[in-house]
Structures are given as C-alpha cells and as structure tokens.
Image (cartoon, rainbow, N blue to C red; front, side):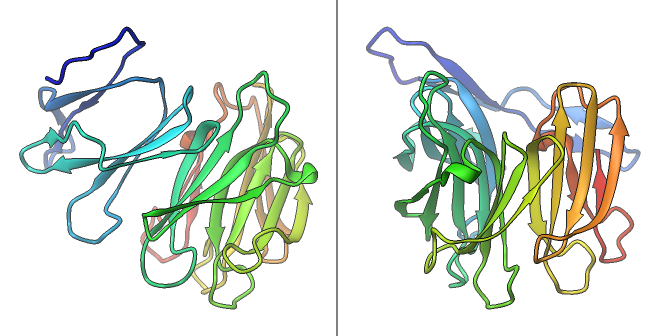
Length: 266
C-alpha cells in the first residue's frame, strides 16, 4: 500500500466480483482490491473506452471536482494505484457519460459538473475528446443553468451528436453539435418538475434518436416523458408516490424483451 504522507479525508473504492450462476444466484467473491481516494466519490463508471477488452474505472469526486482514470486488471482483479489520468473540472462531478462526440470512432467522455453549493456559478459541461483532451465546452446559459444530468445523441441526423441537459428549473436543453457549434441551443422543453435524468438515444429502434426525461418533486410525484428529436412530447407517464431518492441510477432505459425497442425501468 502506498503511504499517505499528509492528513486528509480518505475514501475507499473497493472492487468486488459478482459471479452469476446459471440458476440466477449471485455469488459475491471477497474484495479484490481497495483504492484510497483523497476525496469523496460522487460518481463511478466502468467503460472500455479504447476497445482493448480491458475496462477503465472512472472516478468523479465531489470536493475537488476531479475525474480520474484507473486501470483495472481482470481476472487478477487488481487496481493500479496511480491514476492513469486525472482531470480537474472546477466543480463537483455529478455525472460521467460516454459517447463519440466528434464522430471519429473514438469514445469520448462527457462530464457534468457543478460548483460548490455556496457558489452561484452555473453548471459546467466538460468533455474529454479522444480520452485525452480536457476542454470546457461552455458555461451553461442562464436558461439551462444548474444542470443535473446530461446525455448525447445525434438528434438532427447530421452525423454529429448533440448534447442534452436537464436542470433544476425543469428545463431540458438540446444543444447544437458538441464540437462545432457548442454554445447554440437547438430547442428547449420544460418538464413538470426538477429534471434528474435524461437519456438521448434511439428508443423505438427505428434509427431516430429521441430523449427520455424523468422529473420529480420531492418524493411526491415523478413524471416520465419521451420527447421526439425536435423536443415535442410524444409520450408521458405520471407516477404517483415518486421516488425515494430521485436519480439517474433509478431510471434505466434497456431492451428488456430483446425486440430492438427500449423499455423504461423505474
């Protein structure tokens, strides 16, 4: 274990292996490896960004606002203690998403960050182009400030993804191409409540990207909406009772039946 040479608040990232038997029972193996992170972990993602068959662990922190890449060795189940790359976002990292933002065939990172609660600054979108270049994409415009969630898909069929954000105000904003026209809003939609999840992808299996929006008011009410590529509501479902802890991890879009169309799991 590497020594920690200064007094600091430590947080631990542990790797667990879960093996699923044919009977459907989950068998939890012992902890494989543990990494000490000098900040609280806000979000955690695992993705094979370079298509080498080895996933990379991305850790987004809440205090320092860093995004760090850690190498993960399988089946040895070990972590490289030294971060392969570490990027400063200037705010608490709320989400880490993946997509090919400049359509070059390489997976990029889309990071949604927010300044400290005591700051009046708006949220900031940040992208890592080709997993190496860190660029502040824009300071979010006032109409779409305080973004909670982001996603990306090609909504206007020009071959380049658009970024979609959802904010505290209930506004959903779709932006022009992420790299070439980064600051122009393409369309806006107002959800009934605070937006806590957006998914931009082909929901119907017809080759056209849509946007799924989840918004909620405390624990009382949750509304799920499907928007077309131009931001018009095509489908809406109200869930009385709401969610105990609204968040993107509680609303998933998956092809449950295997028919090529996506379902919403809440």
